[in-house]
Length: 111
Image (cartoon, rainbow, N blue to C red; front, side, top):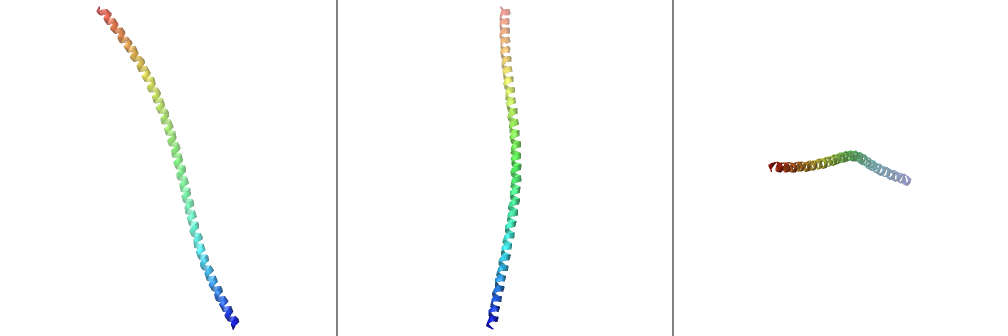
């Protein structure tokens, strides 16, 4: 009889241990599933961020090119302004010279 009681007690302990292990196993599986889901979400977010960064880098490169082209246009316009200013100065000097000659001629004729 004592042996039967001991065996029953061991069976009861084994069942309790089995139930506890099953409960822990379920908890661990839920934790693993939750962690895997979070890792997938982070991977997806990281991929989206990478794509966003690549898009921004491409846009920045395009803007840099536009700025460079605009700077070239500004430089070209400044060069053209300098050329036109120089031509205008030359024409003003020529006009002043002609006006002076006309004044001298008019004064000579008036005498």
